[in-house]
Amino acid sequence: MEGEDAKVKVGGLWSGTIQVDLDKWTVSMLRDELGKKSNCSPDSLNVICAGRILKHELADTILRNVGFKCNSKILISKVAADQGKAINDELTTQTRLARIKAAVDAMTKRHTNDSFPVDQFSIELENQHGEKMSAVSETDQRAVMMGLMLHAKGRHFIEKGQYKEALEILSMGEEAFTLCNQKVLEMVDNVPLLQIDTVWCYFMLRDISCLSMAGRRLKEARKGLERCYGANMERARVLQGGFCPELAIFTRLELLEGIVAYHTELFKESHKALKSAQEKYNKLQVSDEALAQLVSMGYTEQQSRRALRMSDQNVQRAVEFAIEEKEKINKRIQEDRLRNKEIREQKSYGRTLMGKAVDMTILSRLASLGYEKALASEALRKNENDMQKALDDLTDPESNSVLQHSVDSRRRKRRKSFKEEDIAEILSMGFERSRVVKALSNSGTKEHAIDFLLRELPNQAGGSSGGSASEGSSVAKEDSQPDDTPGSQDQMQDDMGHPINGTSLEERDEEMEEEIAKSLTGDPLADYDIEVEEEGRAIVEYLTLLASSGHGQ
Image (tube, rainbow, N blue to C red; front, side, top):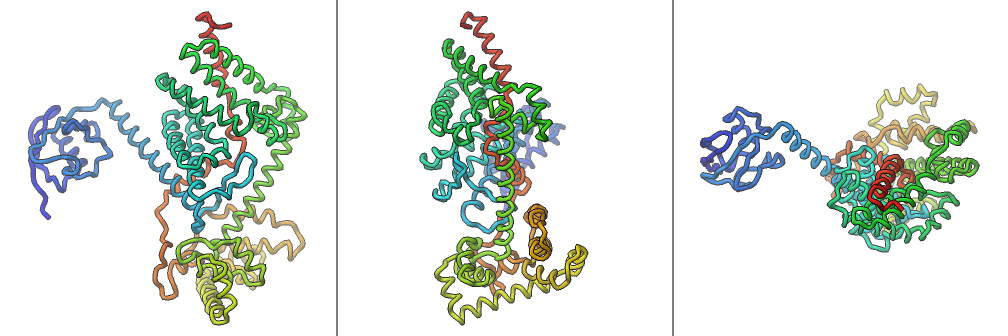
């Protein structure tokens, strides 16, 4: 269809008329033309039509779609250099926030609906007791997981001093939490912590206009923490073996309560909250002597400082805390290694027809009945993880034969795709050729084959290299599968070569997803173990203000 030519009248920095095609010209093309006419950079122009500024995000929009018609009038003006930079910075920020939201949404979907694993990590929810939250609905899991990831990313922005951006992310996290059942939210402490972080951003931006909202948020935060851990955080100490994880976060909470009370002229309440915050702040100050003692025992300065803070500066208790922390970290590392191995194994079995991963729990049950895992996984893959239907196929001779044929066919495909250089590389590590070929046949990729061979070493030589093998293989290569591995091309098509429904991979923002994953530390005390130097300065500032106004007693 031919576009409609139209005249547009221009005023302001340059006056005249220009001829445009309403159905072909975009806002960007209009900007370019106006830039030529006015001898200015297109990015330095403010373009206003019908009282609306045509912002940069409309660059690819057709003129008719933003309200242009024949004889439309526009006004152009030159944006100051710093204003133009501010506009571009705002656009960059909004684009980045949109990427974060989209990446979190994609990661949440993958980790809550049994999708085929594409990550080299897993995300699991735990309550305050460190127990996995597996008995909640998929909708609630997704809402909590999204809220947690956005909160973690928001805290990352806070640590970098980007408080405005942090507020945007925290707001998205709060919205995600509202989609969750209230009883589920009461099992975690992240909502009250998010409220405190939000008010902290208000304070660091010196946004006094948010005071009324800040007071409400702080009340909800205190109520939420007391619900999770008791009025005096006694349950938190029980969960942490008698240690004191709450001092730093309550220092910040009471400081903010004191600031809000000061600006609402509740000076007595302000003084009380600030003095309480100051008392906790002083308890968090680690002596050089105590710090040196723990560092001399082999702990890092960060580990030593945390241990002393959590143990109320008691060196002996701090050592106990550091030992317990090391044991917990080692246990978590071992659990992560086992989970990563399970993910790699799960990938090797491919997708179901609907694009789901093979259910490893059901697979283990079938294997315990004596069925070969490769055969049992093929039965589950074909039957969408329905155990009874899979059993029916495994016990029926004809169906079993078809399954075996599929398994053998896939193995032959993998075997044909082996590269001689991969075999040579693994042979150079000292393994026998027959074992290398067998490992590649069973595993499908070089990385998986090496892992398979290393796992066999303890049985072959009686050594203990299995642990290091897991460690090395768990970081071998993230999210990479050659086209000939199971779960890739041969799993994306049926036996006739037709595409399988539900297996197409969505385009992923891997850079942003990796950035978000790094902010998920897996450290249950990370939200409580915060630096409080800024809090210390603010406490002194507001106590001084109270004293100077005659309200310091």
